[in-house]
Amino acid sequence: MQYGPDLTLIGLNSGHSADSQGNHTAWLEQTLQQYQSSEWIIPFHHVGPYPCYRSFNESYETRVRTNWVPLYEQYGVNLVISGHDHVYKRTYPIRNNQIDYENGIVYIGDGGSVVALREPDLSRWYVFEAAKEYNFFKLTMTQESGYSMLYVEPMFPLNESLVATPFYLISKNDMGDVIRTEKELTLSGLNDEGVVFANFINLPTKGLRNTNITWQSSHPDIIAVDGTVNRPKSGGENVIVTLTATITKGEASVTKEFKVKVLASTGPEGIGMWVNKDTKEVLIKGDYEFLGSNEIALLVMDKEGNIKYVHQKSRDAFGQFQFNFKIREDNMGEEYVVQIGARGREIPYETKFYLTTAATDIMVDSVVFSDALNGQPIERLMPDRNTYIHVSMVNNTEENIDALIIAVLYDSNNRVIKMVMDKENVAGNGSGNAYLVIPPVDGSNLEECFIKLFVWDGVDSMKALAERKMYNATNLTE
Image (cartoon, rainbow, N blue to C red; front, side, top):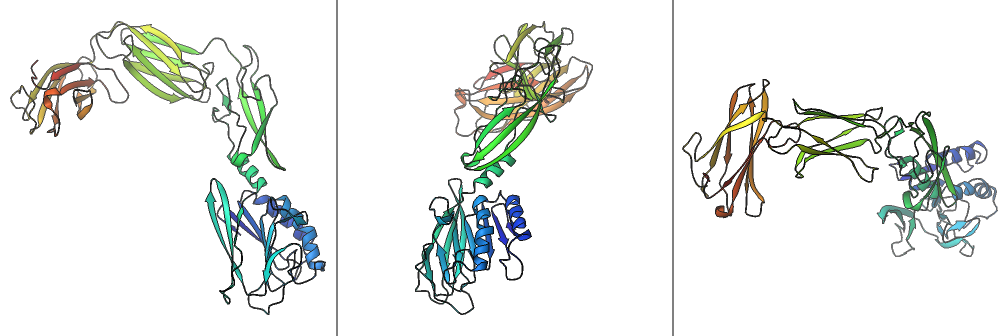
């Protein structure tokens, strides 16, 4: 029975109606292996391996101790529940048939519920405490500092004056930690086909709760065990490398394999750029020769450092990527800087291009500030009234354009107080109008404020300004 990912209970027949050896033991080992990822695996059965009333050498107890206890110790069991002796019992932690406070298993029971009670033998070396009392146990699971804790509390419903010793167990299932690490272990920087485009793969060396991970490579000259990737030379064959992770903790160990495809080099770094000076359109293409992760970032700036375009996208299955954008602003200079970056690169790829700009697609014809929609122009912002902004625009192209107009009110420290925007579709070779309203401003000294007006040619990505105007709030006609 499994209760979520943290608790697995295994019920066994200790010989009263089925043989506790042979197939039963084989099934137990298979089940212990299957549920290794559980924090707690608690077997329960009628006859326990360490009795406190019956003889230590009786046949049932001996078979359980011989066939099952070694499996409990091998697969990280911390607690075992049994009956048969009709008493309350708790043992010391036991491993290899001796007390082991660090790695031992605690055995509790022994069936003191509704039948006649018996007198326990307190002299046995493994008995921590025992009593001739009806009993049950309350188990509480908690998490502390990343570890699962189990609080075991003996309860005596007919003798509340008797107080036994509750105790904590800390999950020490090394095999469980190893199995969970194996399930969670992945390699970053690969696409869906397992192709690596970076010159380095992060190969973790630690897993869950201090599990250790070591690596082997089928082609260490292509992918070294420290994660360094050396691409086959131009003209060579693509190589599929098997990376094998060995995950260990204590005596527990499992392995996991990853298939990684490394593409042969085809020449210099794979970046190409085409610029159409008439349309101001720019096309940038890259392939797997551009080393780095799957996520590619593009940044375009003018010579003054102003951002003109920024975007991010993923490579396709072949490691290729493409960016298309258009230079839209006027009078910002001819020189532009392109930077292309990706995780796994120490510095971005950088190049420049030159473009003589012409008129922008959207031009601002006039801007009017007023105290009402289509009202008379005003010279000052009024603290207790709306400020209306009317923007008249002209489309210089034959295509319809969605223009985005943004008005921002700043304080004297260039901090944004208010921001409003309007989107207007301007027909090809036509004109359009946008109307914005800045609401009253409370708690600000308008003598120190100013307005910036921005007009974008599009809203699907960051575009440069078509026109920018600044107004002193005390005199909007300046």
